[in-house]
Each structure stands twice: as C-alpha cells, then as structure tokens.
Image 1 (tube, one colour):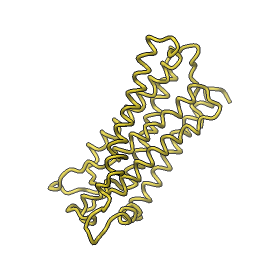
Image 2 (cartoon, one colour):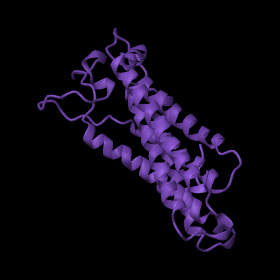
Image 3 (tube, helix red, strand yellow):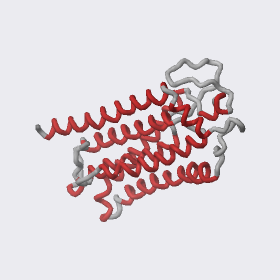
Length: 242
C-alpha cells in the first residue's frame, strides 16, 4: 500500500467512523426517548423546574467560568502563534499553534451557525419540564407561530470539544501515540455537557452533535494544514492516522 493510499484510508476512517457512530447514537437518543429520560432524571415535577438550573458550581463555575477559561486558552494559543514570529525558540510551534487556533475557532463557529438554523428548544423551555413549548424533534416540522429555538447543538460543550485539535497537533508533531490527546476534549467537553444536562439547558443529543462538528472541524483544518506546500523543516506534518 502506497503512502498516498494509506493516508486516504486513514482519513476515510477518521471521517466515516465518527460520522456513523454519531448518526446511530443521535437516532437512539432522539427516537427511543433516552434524551427525555436523562432530562427527566434532573427535573423535579413537584417544583416544575430543574432544581440545579442556577446552582453556583454548575452555572457560575462550570458554565461561566468554563467559558472564560476556554476563551483564555484560545487567546493563549493565538498569542504563542504571534510570538513565534518574534521569538526564535517558539518558531517550531508556529504551524501547530496556527492550526489549533483555527480548528478551535472553526469548531465553535460551526456550532454557532447550527444554533441559528436548527430551530430547536432547550429542555427547560418545554412544557414537559416546566416551560411552555411543545417538544419538537430536530427533523419535525415546527409550527411557525412558535418562537425560534437556539439550543441545538450544545454551545457550551463545544468549547471543550474544540480541544480535539490537540490530537492532530500530536500527529503533526510526530507523536508515537496520538490517541491520548483525545482525552482533554472528551473530559472537558463531557464535563461541560453533563453540567448543562443537569441544569436543563441541553439534551445529550445536542452535545453529541457538538462533539461531531468540532471533530470534523479539527480534521478539516488538519487536512488543509498538511496539504500546504510550505512547512518548516523542524515541524514536518504527519498524515492523520486512526
């Protein structure tokens, strides 16, 4: 097998496997009622509300503080990229920091665009969970007289899932084992996701799609970077491998 065909095979795996798995899990979550069952677990019918919706740790620390932290990470990456044009010792990191800043931004942007076009409501807005709106699934026709929903995909979790780019940074840097660098995205994005489920802000399917969008954004940026003809000698990119 030639290097080109091996690279194409690896890319196909990195596209198709997450996509098929996401499509399957999304269908299961939405069509079997698992989404609703998980939200119902955190909902208190007697109070007609999610008791922890405004919890300090979930709202102020994990949501607001987590958002600020991830913005700081992105700004830090961008700062390193800028400094790499001035400081010689940072020059080997110029390409990978450019990649990481781009992939994180594109991942968050893709989720933001999805929110604008999906017309999907948050659990806490639905009549089943103390709100006033009917539960309309993603591909169902929503009545025109209802307000537009902007809860799909999950926005907050995308700031954590944007760290999927670290996997491809490891690949570009020639790491022998790149897969452990998936863990930061899974841990941070997963923690942000669960915090929002508890608050009633999102269904699990919302954050599943956020994870998929951030993964695809990271993969797309990797393909663009590794196809670029200009690359520093001390930072030769490696094709992504599964």
